[in-house]
View (cartoon, rainbow, N blue to C red):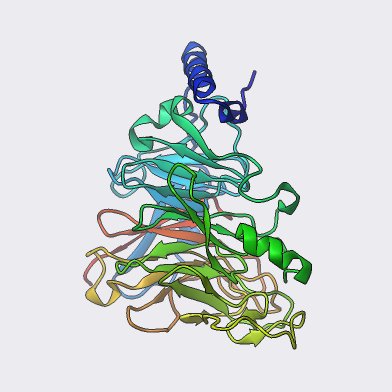
Length: 402
C-alpha cells in the first residue's frame, strides 16, 4: 500500500485529513528509518583517499557512505545533514566528530521522490526539496524528519515547476537556496545542448534555462535570471549577490568553451546562453544572430567541460586566513573531452578570478575516474564536506597546523 503526496495537493481540509491519516498509518505500521551500511567499501574508499593531493596541513577522510550522494543541506542546529540524489533516495546524516554517527534514509511514508536533488534550509528550519518537477517543504526538518509525512507541504505541485513536455533526464538536477530576501531560488537547466530558437519564448516565460525565485509558500514566482544553460550549484555572498556555476555547451572541442562561475547582484540579468556557449565563445547554432544587449559574462572561467557543480563560500576559521571568503566548488569531471579533466575540488581565492585545484587525484587520466565530486558544504567546526556520487561517499576535509 502506498499513498502519493499528490493527494495532498487539494484543499486545506483535505491536506489536513490526508496528513493525519498518513501519520496514523505510519505509526500503526511502525515505519522506521532504514540505516545505510557504513562499512561497505570503506577499505576501498580509504585507498582512494590516499591518492588525493591537498595543500600542506590539509587532510581528507571518509565521513559517511550514502549511495548516489550529490547535494548537501546542513541543518542550522547541527542535528542533521540532508543528502540529495539524482534518483529516488534522500538521506539524513546524523553528524559525529570525525565521522557521521548514522546515515538513514529519509523516506516519509506515502511520498515517492522523483530526482530529489535540490535541498536547502530556510532560516526557520524548513527543508525545501526540489525535484525534477515539484517542490516540497518539510517544516522543522532537523527535529521532526521521522514524522515528515505529517509535516509535508507541496508548494509547487507536480507539473507546475516546468511544463511536463519539457521534462527530461538531461539538465534537470535542480539546486535551490534561500536568499537574503527570504525567497526560494531554484535553477532550471534547459533540456538541450543548445536550446532551439522556437523554444526561447517559452523558456524565457517559465525560467527554463535560468533561475527563478518565489515566496516560501510557492506564491509570487518570477524569473530572476536568464541565459543560463545548466546551473547545478548556487550560493549567496555576504553582500546578497547570488553566485552560481554553469555547465556549458558540448561538442565544441576539447578546449572550448570554458565553464562558468557567475555573479548576479540584481534580478533581470542575462548570462548569454544560447548565443554564447560559455565565456565569450559563440555557439554555431546562433552564429550571426544578434545576442541580447548587456550580456553578463562570467566572473571566473573554469576548465572546459570539467562540469562545475556544487559551490560554497568558506566562512569558517579552521582553514588558514588565505582561504577565508574563498569560493570552493566541485568539478564532477568531463565526458565530452578526449583527455579527461576535472573530478576535483577547486577554489577561487577571495577577490580573484583564478580557478585553482584544491583537492585532486580522483582523475587518473585514461582510466575511469576513481571518484566524482558533486557538492561541497561547510560544517560548524569549519571543516569541508565533499560528496562523491560515483562512490556513494561523503568526505571531510580538515586542517591542522603542520
